[in-house]
Length: 333
Length: 253
Ligand SMILES: Nc1ncnc2c1ncn2[C@@H]1O[C@H](COP(=O)(O)OP(=O)(O)OP(=O)(O)O)[C@@H](O)[C@H]1O
Ligand SMILES: [Mg+2]
Image (cartoon, rainbow over all chains, first blue to last red; front, top):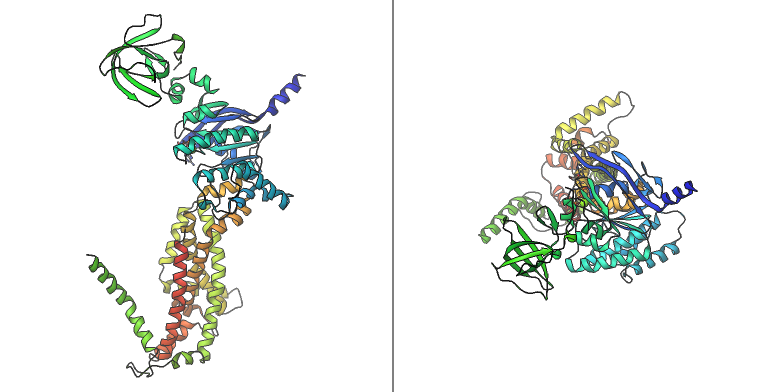
């Protein structure tokens, strides 16, 4: 029974990284990375530039070999396998569409490399894949004849059509303009739900990670700081780094408070909440919310995010900032 | 300032092309001496009835064609290898081959062939000329191919590998098609440098392997003849078209 449990547990992990390190001649890019993806999971890898996100993806894809550690795909180690024998597929940052091939030929490329797939099967699957990303009718265009958002969808279709165990996406939305980015974000999420393939998604946009992911791993300088569900990471970060990476934080007397947890009033609330006095330094109206910055007696700044229907404050006005003790972030370092 | 620049460019072009223009004009001159005596196309007709010239043209074309095909293939593969393996020393040493004076290249090739003939029972001839041409045009091919490769996004090859293509399929389906303009440009350049080489060819040529430049040189030494003028105009035109096409292809991204 016990053995059986282990087998099921192992197979459920579609991708697993164990103590992965990668040393370049003068740089330790990865210092022992471990995490795993379950079937159908949307997993994000976030972190600042240069922390090793792309390196991690390249190791999984087989473009580089790890210095030490192990990668298993559906329970099987992939060490030494070339990229074309690994059942993962990558959506590259600039999509890397083949410029001399049409949209349909780009999508068909992976299927044509397989033995025993008939022409008509290829045609059908390409058609389905393009319909899935809403690109029917653009089959005959070349990559330079479609828009950025469409190129991104071709790249997705091209990678999904080969039915990888895990789809690796290296900042796939970063080349799009902000508005399109938000739209594609939604499409990506619904696409992932429909195909049921595990996504390993890289981004350095925390909002993207929080809104899309089932789980997130926050990386810093070649190590993972914390792994967890978006809400968990946002509300219970274990380190100052994670707290600050995923959103704005005010540090008041050693405790971290998110701007949206802070309320502002003219009088001291005297309701048992934590509070601190300050002077309004700036107030920025952003439409749905107002950002209010106050200077505290110790010279530090504290930012509060006020709802639209709250009261307004004058510059230089003395105010009280307060919050529930339960909203404080308890970080160890 | 603009007018001055235009004038300046005009003067440079005049300096470059006035001799060719004079050559062109005199190829239509009815007289053998350098004074205008009326228009004729006879010299052009005569070129086509001169067996030595026709033989030389055939030789030159054969040599240029074989040398171009072989060095384009070898050079493309070599350029690809240099790009893949990132070998800056080997890459830079290519320029040495381009900078070596032709006479030195020619003499060294001759010395090499003579040494090799101790072991092989062959003599100088078409084959040595072809080998020599392959040798000196290789560097041109590799440099043109490398320039093209540097504009190639390495992610394209990785994407192909990622989608299940092995190295050979990647090369055939992705790399070669994307390099094609560079490969054609390299081939045209090769053909040109091979077709008009005189110094090296004359050193390594044997009997029955006289090329067109060698024949023209011999004719010109007997005095400028309008027949040579006519031939030169035709060669210049032909190679000119080649070079324009090569330049065009190289620029096309
Ligand atoms: N081939 C290499 N040789 C040496 N160092 C490298 C090499 N590739 C990456 N690095 C280094 O490893 C570190 C991690 O790089 P990586 O590309 O994984 O960062 P990243 O997290 O993807 O950053 P970004 O968000 O900017 O894409 C960087 O400091 C980088 O300079
Ligand atoms: Mg990166």
